[in-house]
Image (cartoon, rainbow, N blue to C red; front, top):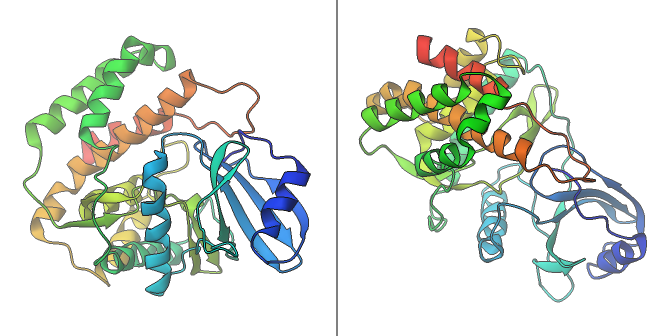
Length: 313
């Protein structure tokens, strides 16, 4: 989440009035994340999240994302539900941007998850994979291996500005992926970005799974690899936390058992997950938007993760 587009209070009030959820009481920009503009809105009828879609999201794909959130919420997952306005429209326009109002969920994201929270996250991811069945799998993962190749080529030796030798590390990882790419694995709808800041907790219980705008159809094991590299290291990527890694896996397999081929592929898919976040963060670093309320994230945190996984799996 982030704020690139400032919305005047008068326009926010008119926007809220379309929904029949009371009058606007408070609006606060949310700085976390890098892709869209987000506001927490409080009305006399409750709390909501307003998202204005800015980057990396094609307008034609927004109905798919919003429909997926509705599908998962209907299946009983703690997923925010897109709100239709009084005319039944979910997707809107605001300040020249596509926009949607979604339900607010209680809870807090954690920076140092407990083992119980890690188990809950693994369990929730497996539940999401099962609940996605029946939703049209028409959106391939656009941030997979082809993206990594293209992003590495576009960044080139600018990577070495971030850290000497980073370009060579990325090229070596790409060569390993090309040489050891697994055979077909079980696949379906994945979240693709289930970091701790996209999971809300009340105590050790998950109260919300949020930010579905990288969701796609891909291998379930890749989604578990993303979860693993996001949760099983310190935030700076300097230290691997094996107890968290084990808890994530235990939680996941309490709902959906992994096939042998998925287990074998996890180390390589974890390398790809590291590359995906290293490269998108590097692109953001070099394409920073002046004046935006955004919290930038360190690409090198995933270079450190990548080095560990290459050595230890």
